[in-house]
Length: 84
Image (cartoon, rainbow, N blue to C red):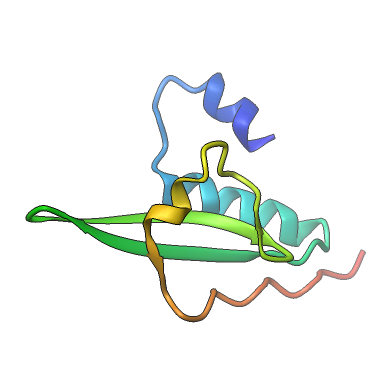
């Protein structure tokens, strides 16, 4: 759903915005996931990247971009499952 929304959007959301949306939607469905944030230094530039993992598998990473970033040691906690 998130990828479809991005494709049809007139703006291009950041990886953090996209990952937050996916993380929240999964949590609303009771699917445990983790929002991950990583950093790297490219020359004199500091860069950050965000992605979502389920069972340690990146969900919104078509090209394994996350492998080029040092992820913070702990992921952000999963959202608690909401009662239906």
